[in-house]
Every structure is written in structure tokens, then in C-alpha cells.
Image 1 (cartoon, helix red, strand yellow):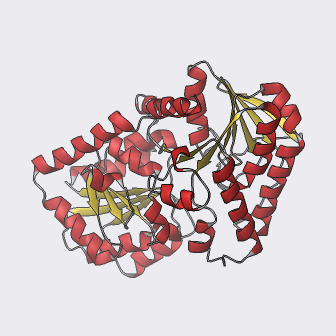
Image 2 (image 1 turned 60 degrees about the vertical axis):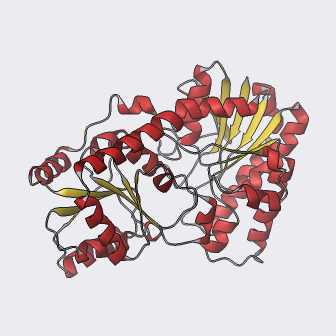
Image 3 (image 1 turned 135 degrees about the vertical axis):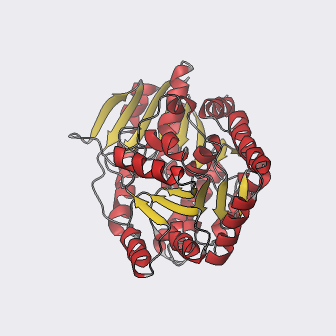
Length: 406
């Protein structure tokens, strides 16, 4: 099967996020498929962007053919980023016949965060009679309205809405990472039988030979464990959207000296959080710099709870599919989900606890977990490992995706 996957922000383990296109494509290559990924030459999600000299440039990455389109750099989420979206879709349409001649796809997957790539993809589908699958990571334009504060009457939001409706109506299948989005999609033009949910998951082979942690970080974590600390850990971006101020304020409220908080990562909120800890003399919080994705298995060995927070939002009625949850559960680490989200694995499979986002409520849940019996903790860890191994390995999810294509 020849698969053409369109994702403006696609990355790889070396380049950085986002990883899903690479890992699924790698599994499909193992199955004997020919996979091309079309992506932009710049993404704010990547730690390293490819060196692209030509307007359209090919590169082989582990047997996957990447096609880079020059879209230009941008800062933040303003007009600059929007212009790169338009450039990406324009060049996708401009080079569509060249691309189709090279790959002759049986399946075209539109998988960019925004849905505007459906328009050039629909044109390509007509040209080559391929099946068209639309994959939804985030609910755009709902995300722009709920989290970005944009008016639903803003011209860009209305354009995104047109793209979303067209994708739902004209794609042969719609794959959602969000388990509870079906009814919304039906209201926006999708036939119910087109809906399939394939969430994120764990790349099992990455856990067999993980990268080491930085020496100094490992030494400090070992010291905490030797001191019998119960570690509440977080890894990932330090942004407002991750609600880490609630975690730090929960740490401030906890009197039990056996509980310690570890925050690993970087972001615009990190300095403010560190200043708060210093100003309020919060003694049970340690900050570390970000680690490589390959080091996450070794990091999670030190966590007793993995924190996952977010600002409360209507968006979570559609569900969540956060990579840190799957990684934590695969490691057998219960998750503290500090916001309400429909269809979440934590409640469904009893592999952690769900809390409101208020600091006092978070503190109470952490203390409750600490007081659980060893048998209860082991049961929760076993549930976590079991659900990932049975349902959420990338190797299995990639096969599920192939079955949808067929």
C-alpha cells in the first residue's frame, strides 16, 4: 500500500515533536507499505528543524520518505504562523501533481493540527482516486475559541470552520485521537459510520534501551529516593495551559515532609514558578531541565505519581490523548489527572485519581495516594501496565489504522 500522510508539523525522534506521524509511518513501513510524509520545513514544536534549501525537498528518514515544503519561520501563534499554514496548503496544491507522480497513493491522510489541508488533499484524491482519511488531533476551531479567546466570527476562525466541516463531510474516514468527539463531528457534517478513534500510545521498543538521565539529575533523584521521599513528578512543557501553578501551590499546602515534588521541563512559566517557590519558601519542590524523550523511561522510575494538569475547558468534553499519560501508565506510575476530561483512562481503568484543579483538592488527593496500602498501590500500577500493553502500544494502533484504510 502507498500511503501519503500530510502533517505540517511532523517530526521524528531526532527533530522532536510531533512524533505520531513518524512512529505510525515506521510501523507501516515494517508492514511493507511505502510511506511519504509531507511536512513544513519549520515547526515551533521541533527542537531541531531540517535544513531545507529548495522549495520542495525530499529526505529519507528510517525508510520513510519525508517531503519538506518551504513555509518559513514564525514566532508565537499570531499572523506569522497563520501565513505559514496558507503557504503550506498553497504549495501542497502547487506541487500536487509532482507528488502524486512520485508516490501514486492508495490512501491520503490529512493530519495537520488545522483542517485546511483537506482542500488540497481533496483535489489530490480526485486526481488519483485514493481513499481520503482525515485525522483529528485537536478540535479546531473550537480550540481557537476556547483556549485562544478568539471570536467565532473572526474571519480566520470561520475559514477553519469551513475546512473542518468540509473534512468531515468529504473524507472517507475520520480518525480521532479524542474518544468522545463523534457527536460533535456528526453535527458538523460527518456520517456516524465514518468515525474511528485511534488514540496515542507507547513505542515499546524505546523502553528496551532507554537513554540515561543527566548525571547530576540522576544523583539528586537517587538522594530523594534514599531519603524515602514519595515523589510527585511532572515532565513536559511549563506553560499556563499545564496548570503547574496549581501543583506548586498544592506543594505549599502539604505538611507531610515525606512528599516531594519534581518538575522536569522548560517553558515560559518556569521562571515565574521558580520565583514563587523561592518567595514563599516552598522547600519540597525541585526543578530540573528537560530531558530527551528517550530518557523518559529512566525518569519515570523515580516517580510515585505522575501529575497531568490543565486549565478547565469545555474542550475536554471530547476527551484527551496526552502522550505523558500513556508513558506514565506503561511505567506503572499512577496518574493524578487534575482536571475533568470525558473518557479518560485514569477513571476508566482505575490507574490513578482524578481531581479538580484547585491546589487544596490536589494536595488532598496526593495525601490520599500516599496513605494507600501497598496492595492498593500495586493493583493500580498493574492496571496501568495492563491497559497500555493490551490496548495502547503503537504497533497495535498502527495495525488498527491499516485496517481502517482497507
